[in-house]
Picture 1 (cartoon, rainbow over the protein chains, first blue to last red):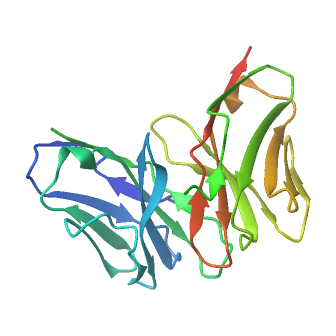
Picture 2: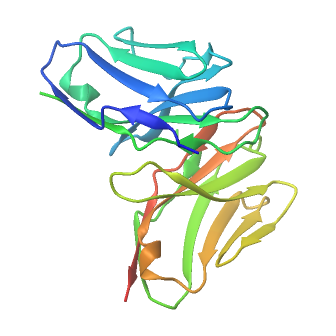
Length: 114
Length: 111
């Protein structure tokens, strides 16, 4: 089975531009998570979807960030406008129904905002 | 305030010896714990987990120990191999889907 697929793997953009990160979760998984990893703060949860519905977006840093999950096989994380401090690695993860389940991570998108 | 702490940013161990990675937590509501391994340019991959009703879980060369009274868990790798060189993340959950991660410990296994 294919794992969690993220695209692009690398993104370099200029400040003020819109950035869209994409994620395809593992088939059959009904929970999807977006994380951001930085040196200072480590791995932080940004938003969590269950059955395509956003359940907890308290980790989204500000209104410039938005996430959607239009169907069970696709999610996007958008930053508009982007700022240099958004530079980080963004991970998407998915898991099966039920608590205490293992989250499976994609390879991540390394975002650099110049 | 960090609820999951990995106080050692890095650890070096000789091949064949034991690697011990430590993790402390502050939230007594956490009831399950996981270790993830991460290689450069890859996402974290699940390694081993333990429920709060247990104090030990073993999978091959990997064993996780949980001390609830001390709010401490550790990952033992025996024997350590060069391929184990990676960043190891401790994570904790409190009966929900969400996990709280430590900042990671970089393990280097020296041949």
